[in-house]
Length: 446
Image 1 (cartoon, rainbow, N blue to C red):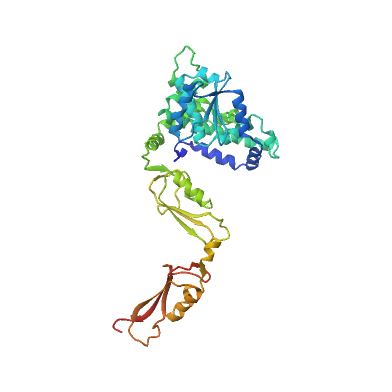
Image 2 (tube, rainbow, N blue to C red; image 1 turned 90 degrees about the vertical axis):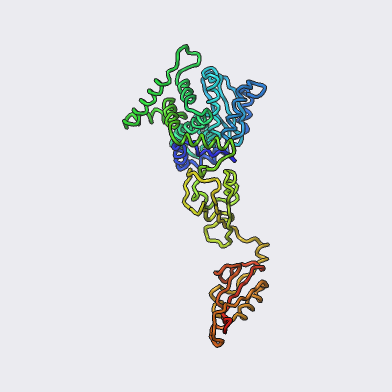
């Protein structure tokens, strides 16, 4: 079962990604990118240019990754070291993400904070950021001209700005993942402070409180004054990372919230295999029209195993084969994304799948609708079903008549097919279905 990253994804991350996907031209750009991008080629280039960290090469950093990945529920990615004086780290790829750290990062960060940086990058993987972040970095670095898919530079500007904004928001989610690995906000705040200007070799004591005061002052400047906010937006509109003071402020705010406590409890329960509640990773309504098998397996992967399935074979003009028609959770149809639900909650999936040729060969088309049997002689109705090919026919008297001359005598009161009381002419029914004919008959006294 994967870790549900919804427990720590920042709300602005989701909103910004939805806004990015809604921009005209984004789908066109994405298709062009996927056609022109070669993940394997990038990986090979990285293998040729950088040092791969492993059990044989700088093993301490490889060992840092293992518990981080276990906590976030992801596979351990490859890790590389790049010669670059700028302290930095990034994650590239899609099907096989990998992390690159620079030599400048190791010069800037104490050992314990390198672990925090790695947890941050693993947070991007856990949140499924990596493909879009790879696209965004290539686009913002000006190397996506051949992937424009017919979009000119001007048409790409809103996509660039939206990519940059989402990437800044995604950093908040990755910072939260690092906080959950550290169990506190202190390391992420110190990491931000060192990125802002505190090399580990500077012979002065860091004052975290003063840095947080600075972060609060910036937040106030850009929140209370609309012009200041506009200026900040203009200055940083194409930055891929939020400024360090903002990241530190966001981390401290989340660390003081009930959501952080609940996320920590969730990861502990995940690690100990004692989960009793999970945040729903999607709204029920978002599952409509999705593939049944895909949804079923996804629910199982998140630990929801109490699943019933109802197959319908009657098609409306808008149904796709195998598509979900309706979903309920404990009888509800309106459960939103992120609502915490019990792991034992009952899920019912109704989906459309037409009868196969083999199934159709075992079916009989009903000669009449249910309403056409009422009031007819029981022998005639029984004969109708036998002529149609049914053999499992049961007649059952309803002893409610006292006068043998009553006109309702031996007239059909109800017909059920496998306990279904309503059916239409032409409906396909299994040859083995039980036909139950209930008719009016004399009482015992009569």
